[in-house]
Length: 639
Image (cartoon, rainbow, N blue to C red):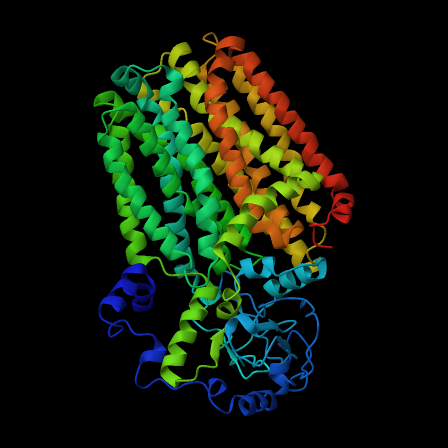
């Protein structure tokens, strides 16, 4: 528990205020002994560790044992990319560890004789001895064989704890690493209980921000009366919030990738601003101010919507990641569904401002929980801070983390440009990306059109009050619950055993559930549209919404898995680009759906949208049957 508090934001604040006298790390304790690998005899320690490996331990080794590290003194014009960067070991969510005790050859290069960080470039071991997060495994995989190796490692069972021997560069720099294969500082080695607690916090954070969009919906009639605006203008309180939380990740996601910053500072600072903004939003007494504050709230609440998945990737192995990603998606989907339920009755009983106060009452305690209990999960940041402590303890300036060296040539602006330009470039040049993004954006826009169609159907046709109307959004929650149960069943009984037995296989195999579930999207829309009639019981249309939700949830989960496997190097920028474009289209859907349903009617309007989702069905089937050809011709896909 003390480690959790120490690594949480409150612990870091206490350490800063006391000048690191309280909540000390092991390296700061007086009785702590520095591992021999980080002392002057690091090279001899490596040899001793290799010599002491007995035959019983060798059975756990994933690669053959090689001779001790030999430095190559001749500089090379170009460094070859290793098969896997920073990957040795992945632990599954039930605590399984993979032990890799082999010594690999390290090829190094430097541009001059000065040991400055910006002049150090390394080609790390083919399969290193340190464990890193799933995110690193994906981004550093450039070929299909590297992805296969990453998944193979994530399925192996581990052996006993072994010391990790750090790599030494040709200029004497020692790369600070995990001390042992089960180092508790490594998020991959945390207990299942701790991982689930952190996952719970990320999901609550995500749900609160997403709930902030739809919780405003019951307030729209009150906003129209108070400020004398029409429905289109009043809906801007919803649409501007949705647009803003698509813009935010373009800036905040790159910041969280900087090793010196990590995940927690962007989370805590922006979420604190989000909570503070909710106070003037609930009190503002002019319409332009309300819209501006809603936009700013969406913008500053957005980091977890993109980076939350990265935090989960830091902790869970590749083979277990789909389970927790679907939990995160559950929170993201249920947030908008629960918003109208929470605010519907209070707005009816009090006034339109109550929906905004309720969001504050939810988000405030969540921020306090994160401040007290959310540990840093970025392996790059954890190792960088460990390197700082080791340098201070040993007075050895040659101790550096790999992330520290990488960061010397890393610029935030370059990361932002990557997030802005790369997704659009890939969409133009890669047909598979175009199909995926179209599917993603269309179903997301239709999902947000429900916030305009539900008042027309259940308010005007069935004469529900605001509280009862909000309860109809439970149909979305029911659909997501059924979908996640079906998806987990598929993963556990089919996908995971298949990977363990036969390897990763073609990425298109991850689309198999989408072949069935994609058909649910147009079917659900047709049922919702044509059963929305005063002569038909309201339950029929609710069933249609649940069927549609089952379809979109499973399709999106399949895309979440397919994208990183097909474009592992560009997955982060692709997801950031998806966040922006889907939010932009959803913003537009909020405004075009009301005229659509008023002019065409609910039945024909839903039929038009269902026709678009039929195109999505063909897109999914096209990817499944022709994806291999598209990947072969793509300049971005892993070959």
